Amino acid sequence: MAREGLFNAFQHSKATRISVHLSYGVPQFSLRIADDGVGVPPQLQADGQRPGHWGLSGMRDRVTRVGGSFQLRSAPDEGTEVLVSVPAVHAYPRAGERPAFTSLQRWIRALLGRVTPKPG
Image (cartoon, rainbow, N blue to C red; front, side, top):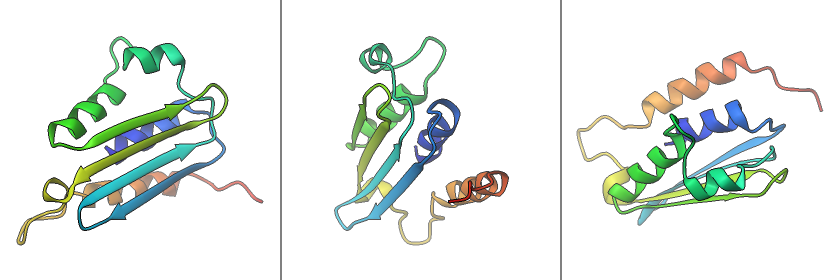
């Protein structure tokens, strides 16, 4: 979900700033992705997806399937905020299992290696 949310922000938002906040809490895992871009069109928010695109609806489906919550907050030219929370029992690996977030970490490192920060 984090990868999809970041991909959407980089691909569609035309943002100058994108922030990610991860919270590994005892009761739940929380993710917040926010940008200062163009926002998600109101019709797309109402429909939940574009024809042939499954990003937002796929994220919402995966989160709700495990008892989590998904919120999308957006306004034209005011950016977008995606809030996800997942119960700890579904978010964290059990003893002896490989953590699921390692592929996300590799993807972020690869992405950041291609992005050149703007000065000031």
